[in-house]
Length: 120
Image (tube, rainbow, N blue to C red):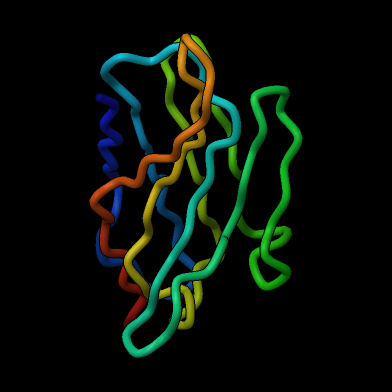
């Protein structure tokens, strides 16, 4: 069983910064892509940023140039550095990981979510 534990959310003023972390633990053979999603009240969950095991990244257009995703494969941890935050970034942020099983097959795991609120 694999678990993802997120940290780093909170309340920040517009223009401020936050850094989210997500650590995977448990019976891990291999982690492929890791990503961050968010869900604002009344809206669908959307992809914010994703990073492959090789370090290739992709971002939602509205966060390009402001957010940076990175990962430490030795620690099974993914980060999301969020700068120049805007009120529209307010949401619950979820960590996601795609993993391989030792004996074949793939599965994904979600974190419990961490609240990010951007407000003055």
